[in-house]
Length: 373
Image (cartoon, rainbow, N blue to C red):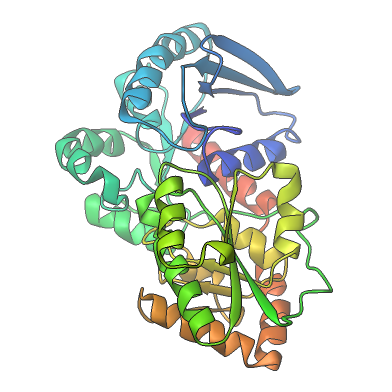
């Protein structure tokens, strides 16, 4: 398995990978080597489970949650050496890459006849990351070669599969959604909106997440007489710019930048808030949204990939991406206690449909089908 991001590095793609490995650790007839990134500058080997090894190719990375372009190239250059070594020394049945690029590039360059599958995770689908517009154009031909040589390409939402099909219309792309740990993320019985409404978003602070929409919504809420506070969990290169934006709007006391929250503290963070709010332009399928749902939080979100599967009677999808529409959605929940309470119940019930055990099982079915061929 290849993944240039793996906890503590990265975001949802790495977390999903880790949760799938926790399920694979229970499978007796499966052995897995994972090649990923580390921060130490050297190669490190970890024993994730009796049947799973993690190889971390270290680079001098500045930020856990933000990749600079030279860091991506640096990891590829260093990882290639160890990837070739593993491929030459082991009799693998299958290669599984998380992200079509950069991880999938290694599969395409050398696989020794071993079939590989790709799990699309978001920004590796052309058109989903506004920061990579030029790169999508320049690398389009390479991306097509990586995709076309894969045995299977898997999306994690129907919306993502639809986007991917526009890039490679000849491919049938199955969907395997993310899962959620229903024992770790549980609702709070004290989630009641009082004088103050606590809004939470969990996100990298990058352009595609459009956190400025949420900050402006908080401004409008307070101008309209709703005491709204926005808690932002996550880090990214826009941190200081967004801080200044909240100062400029005179809502710095209503916007809390929590930075990177340790994994052990994340479940309680959800339980301390009332509503989960997300303004992403694109997602694969949001792990954070699933965690919020399992924690019993009503959702207010843009209409991005993954929403079709996740949002039913447990949230409100904003009809457009304006701060004003977000405010209307928030006001609807704040002013209607019965709706808010119903959505809390529905959020948990909807989350219970998504289990990592099911996700891992579907991947195992694909593995067996490919190896059988």
